[in-house]
Image 1 (cartoon, one colour):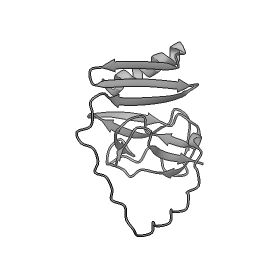
Image 2: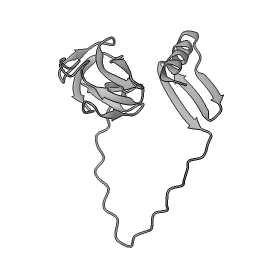
Image 3: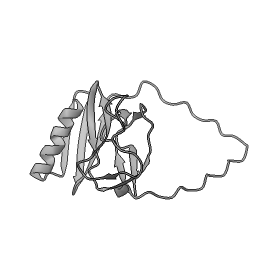
Image 4: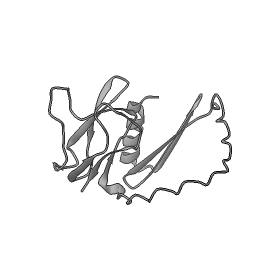
Length: 152
């Protein structure tokens, strides 16, 4: 199953008002749950991992103190990656970046490209605001749901 098929399922769910969808194929289990306009996708392979991680030996040295908790960022002020791939700030190396800190964006503003399986996917902001920070470096690999931009 590829990302296009998953996007089609999500769009069908939005149009029909479905809140849950589950599919099982060979070694793939796909479950999508949504609440209002949020979409949550869970992938689960049915085959076990090739090996289990080795147990960590306990140390007699005192544990280092935990770092101070970072200020929580409002999830509504983040633009997250809708897929796994490679993050690009511009359509080509010679082109200017789609957005930079301080730029105002609307829901339809293209903010970056995520390349997945040799397909360049334009990512739209999907929210209005002003770019406060770009959280990923150009050419860096990103994961599904990883924050890409922080809005003011």
